[in-house]
Image 1 (tube, rainbow, N blue to C red):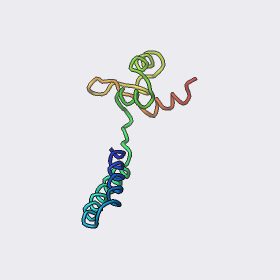
Image 2: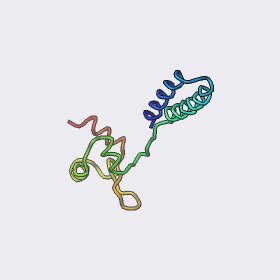
Image 3: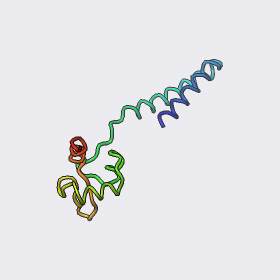
Image 4: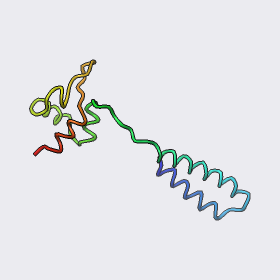
Length: 106
């Protein structure tokens, strides 16, 4: 989205240099609005997750497949350390422990 707004901003800047003075005020206002939107998007803090996350987060963060997660749960990872079931019965993973394991795995 930021890329799209940046492209729009560049197009408006180009138009601004090639228009008369009455349109320049309108274009300047539009550019100011786009700039404020871009700065808002860029200054947002990153999304952080809790200690225990669903498989989709682990798959995305570490590039693991659901089959690999299942295999690690069955063979290598300790229940209650690397993974556990949440109150609804879904398997969740400890990001920090999986990260530590990835760093030390041979």
